[in-house]
Amino acid sequence: MRAGLRTYWRLLVAGFRQQSTYRLAALGGLIANATFGFLKVAVLFATVRAAGGQLNGYDQASMSAYIWLSQGLLGSVNLHGRSDIADRIKDGQIAIDFLRPLDVQGASVVTEVGKALFALIPRGIPSVLLGVVFVGMSMPSTPLPYVLGLLSVILGITIGCTSVYLVATAGFWMIETRGVQVLYMIVSGFLAGLFVPISLFPTWLRVLAEATPFPSMMMYPIDVLSGRADTFESLQLVGLQVFWLALTGLVGHSLTSAGRQKLEVQGG
Image 1 (cartoon, rainbow, N blue to C red):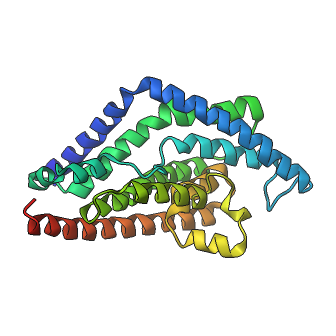
Image 2 (spheres, one colour):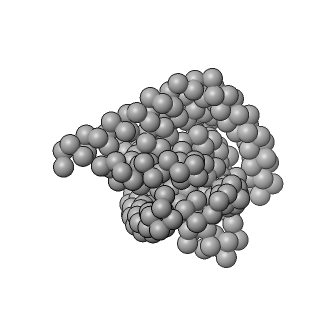
Image 3 (tube, one colour):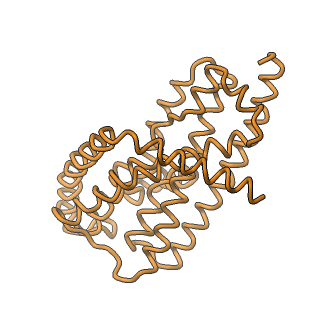
């Protein structure tokens, strides 16, 4: 048991170190985050002012918190649908992975989480600091929202990885999965609350979004970390995240087993 945990810990660290080699890419990502952050400030602040200074509970300070926290999470939450395991399924190297004494799904998710955690350092934290320094934002004054927020952010990142793993498993049955990845990218960003808070959606669309795991990746961590949700609501949101993590993990396990059987049937 301890040896297994140590192996996954090493994979997490390896993913973190692997991503740390792409420092120029991280700088480019931070510049993109900042650019689109200021664009969102211009558009959403104008929307709040046009609504009379309050828009469904958002004033400029709380809207700023939403904007810069969402930009900060953009580099860590996988909303683009791509993963290394998708390439290994496509080129057949997944057959070698199945021979290793490791759970393929667990190893893939842990490695991707390690990469995502590194992105918080050069992209996530600086993006939020830019918002604090140049725009200002409202944030909680007590430590509990930050503790729950950190847990919620880690859960959101992990749910993003387990969900993208589901996209990758389509490769067991499809020759080309780029169409599925593009569809995932379009749907996930919108329903996760990347462009506007999902509480501003029409009721039917908000209900639809909440029936998917996407708000658990970004919107719920933002609500918890910014203090928009009180303690009871934050615990409910974290509970929902645990539910989606368990569900996507179980579905991924089933698809991995089915995909492995298909490889064996085909002699892969």
